[in-house]
Length: 98
Image (tube, rainbow, N blue to C red; front, side, top):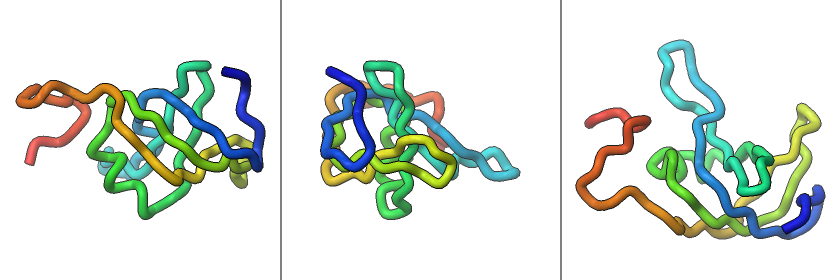
């Protein structure tokens, strides 16, 4: 798979990673670390809660590659599918226990 270009529709496969924290250490932003070693920050508040529940899981996202204010590439997600999840009953070490 080649490098994604801003303004184009792409499929990105990678791991959901924490990408921003508040002063208390709570995760406030996420990104997709792709198989081709690019990092795509997610700049959509409506996706954040869903993606926080998928930290460290492998996902396949489809969407438009966008240029963010800091001249980095991000992805505006149209669809998301987990392609490898933690086994049921296992613990994701990056998620807070409730």
